[in-house]
Image (cartoon, rainbow, N blue to C red; front, side):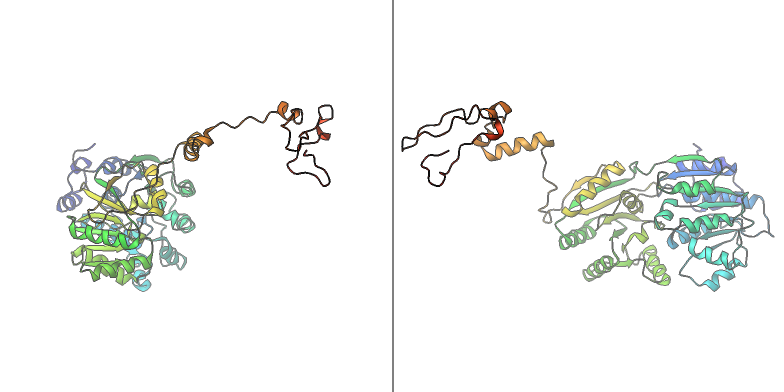
Length: 462
């Protein structure tokens, strides 16, 4: 691994930007990706969120464009991302790292003024960061042109698939210069359907795997707090926000209505909180994120729209008010803390109905979750009761429950015993008549069986 960024021999303009931002030692993913990208190789990269992958692809792009300026060219590099928040975050990274270069970039996402974006495209930005839907619209109207493209980056490809963008992405790839260099980044390389993109996008790629999705993040402590229901969770959450030491906290809800209700509750309890979800207009979403960035609020309640793309300094607590629906969602939520070498804590509030999902997430991510409780707010739910193992255990449990009588083994029902039915004589009844018949010489199907009730007109029991 390189000891510092000077080993990459970046242009002076880039080194000044790195020094300004305090970048000295490359992360593991940067140390592996940057040299390969500077060689012009196609790359297939699996790296956990928060590992520094944005700079891993931005720095080689900027190094190439600064070293070989082409003022008459159209857009030379395209970064495709699944969400608006991630697009803006990459734009911020570019602005900071490239502040001493003459490179310019544009952001094309849904929710913003199309006229403004068309004006941006007419300036031929060298680097374009875009979400698939809006970019495809502008390609179809001829406002965007990717025929001069030299580098294509697809970031968070697994999320792109989850959001249903695969067809849009494939259409955009088909509109680019086929001689381009391509890099694909994904939290996991085992996502169903990923091969559809890699086959069309990459040529003999080098595979780089750093901090794979199922490897526990070394800078994040994962905790579980058992709860008895929504109201109990609210009380526990409020205690955590009032008593934990943190600069900023992200609280995740699975639904928009749940996030709104939780935000109203916390604001009513005096917390400096704001709510972020996908139904907000883009201007309002930008305003809310800005409030958290500036510190005017220190608690953000969000749906999974904020699980990716937000890189906000000082997020030291991630709290899952609702347990996420999958292990991948858990990873991307908790990845908002413990970034860039900082320490973070992820706390999940888990009720009885969420226990099975919690165990599934633990197995999938190979996580060691620390159990904790709050004095005065302990849950009556203590986790599932221990089950005895297998059928044998169940049999033993039933035997103990039913007592000694049930423990007596049941006689085996053997064929030879059934053949002798009627051969044995029973004690005489009070009337002196015998009970039973001599049926030993009759065929089995024709024998008469002893009866418990007398037949009509007979005093003899059979």
